Length: 104
Image (cartoon, rainbow, N blue to C red):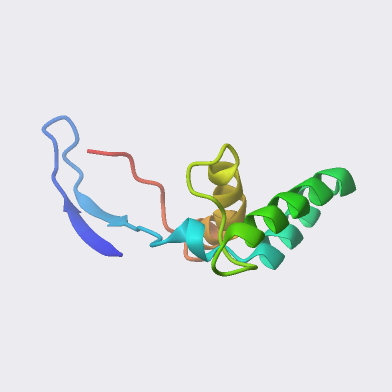
């Protein structure tokens, strides 16, 4: 994570700090058990959870680290990564009270 000074634009005299965060190797490090539990709590649909479980089992068979990671670039990778990182997003915004800042 890095802090970056936001440059004040003439029409926005308020200046401040931006926090830019990058989750490294996110798709490679997602834990299947956590992802399935998050899916169960979020959707409460046994068929969807079973489908996701089969998808992860098939991916785990091809992966070098079974139980970890999702295929980068697949149709579901963005959705699954967002689902997985949603609690982190809420923790940062709600518990740490970081405000959403628009780009300068």
